[in-house]
Length: 150
Image (cartoon, rainbow, N blue to C red):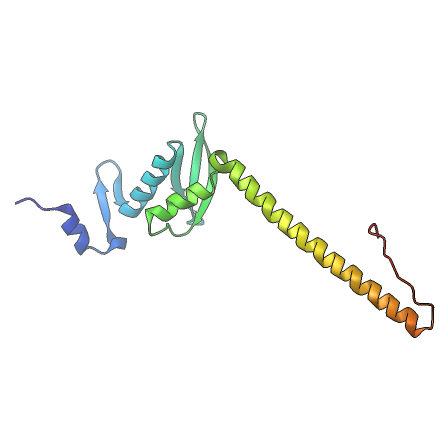
């Protein structure tokens, strides 16, 4: 009689799906899956958990023995491997740097345009207030221009 492992895993709740691997010990399948997603995305990536904080982080191996953190995931791994893959893709400045830079610049330009529009509206409101004040004082009503460099 051959036992299908998927039937066994279907009977065990997902958070309890752990395997004991000789030489490695007890292994959580979600961690193995997340590690596989990192390796598939880039063979230099590895997944690790900080001992003190308990946060998961994706590291990149640079050179022979140097690991540098590139993405902080938080205390819980994503439930779905596709979520982690999307996170890796969105944060990949090396492959998508031009697109990310373009999005950042477009966002900054929108902020500048909005700021200029609000400043122009404030200039107009100030000019109207000054004109009203001059009329109240009986001063000859004239157009008030506020230089842009003020």
